[in-house]
Image (cartoon, rainbow, N blue to C red; front, side, top):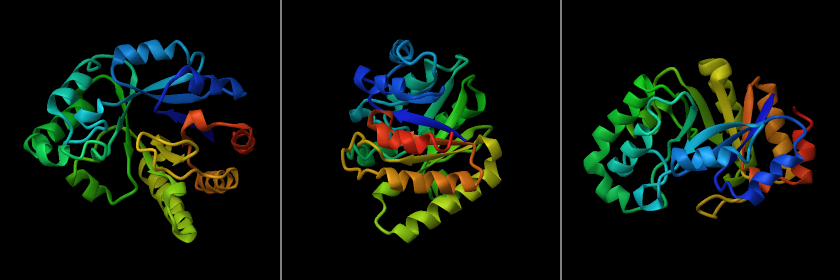
Length: 242
């Protein structure tokens, strides 16, 4: 199984955690523009990178039909013809709640623009989605169809009931492998906090348990949120599965 990392805050301090790894990994690195992403890439080599598009907070931050139309168009147009891997993190604008009010006027055309990018643009698209019913997510513009890879985020550290965590993780993995095959990936976390700073963190023991389930389900790649939280205890667990 391949084990990769999200990095939402690609500072030098966070990226130097790559020096701890004894294998080549992939970093899904957040950047506000392709130019910024290219600059960050230089600090990640020889590891692989995926461009994780983020918008400014006031624009909606994550990719959704409620985000700023101008911001979405800017972000997608600048990479339309580039031969790269790009991740669309499909989440509602929780850090910009006013987008729930002002964003509806652009909902339909934003949704169509995102689908057109998936269908027609050159980049290889990876969709990062919540673990919910696909039809419901598509209605909300938080899931799309196409020849894509898919990451389902199952962050068990933020779930309260242990039995529910295990059941959901196994179900999402089994369904994902059946639907996408090797194009399916699972997002695990959290070993560091995100932009909301509200996330509870996984213990190394919980990470081991999650990775064991993922391995048993035959998932090809697990992506851990996030690189900056890597330490020796987590690394010992990871090394048991690579």
